[in-house]
Amino acid sequence: MKNFKPYYAVIFTSTQTEDTKGYTKMAEKMEALAKQQKGYLGIESAKNEVGITVSYWESLKAIKNWKANTEHLLAQQKGREQWYNWYNVRICKVEREYEFLRKQES
Amino acid sequence: MKNFKPYYAVIFTSTQTEDTKGYTKMAEKMEALAKQQKGYLGIESAKNEVGITVSYWESLKAIKNWKANTEHLLAQQKGREQWYNWYNVRICKVEREYEFLRKQES
Image (cartoon, rainbow over all chains, first blue to last red; front, side):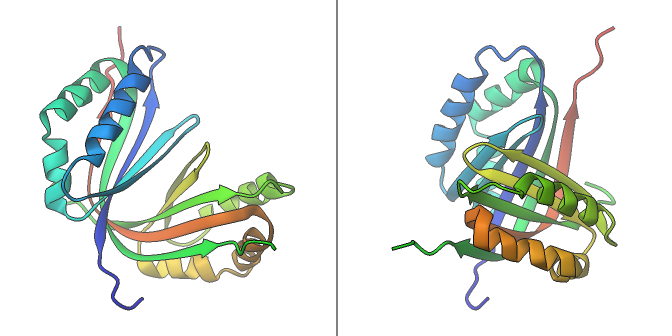
């Protein structure tokens, strides 16, 4: 892994309540807003019994700024009041990475 | 975050081929096998367009051992041959963590 520049991942795992009203719209809004933040690198999301959203950031500073974003703070509060039974947030340093990509069949 | 002991997360993201034969059985087998490994802490998984599996480990050594496990190596090979169009593996150090748990309504 030459020249690998460490970056950060926020692993957000959650289980939801049955009151999902407004959730999808807010999730879309927050994803769009995250993408506009300085230091944002990407986001991946999937949900079955547990929801997992991983967002990627250039630095801890970028994560801190995003966490403290005013609109995001309101969304977090609403999440605790209405949408989530449980969530866990892990701030991680990505130290290594590798990828597989299937060759196109001709 | 007093007394927080760092640990490691492996973020595995993937997209699958249409040939899913044998996949679910193998995924269950690998999850059961992972749980028996030294240093294993937990696993979380969800899949829609993208599949995300995050496994948690006490150390980089534990991750290395699991990656090199003979049965797991065979599963990885089969994954590249048959099940995955793409995957990405990120080895991460979990530096901080916080949790929300809804209070039970009485």
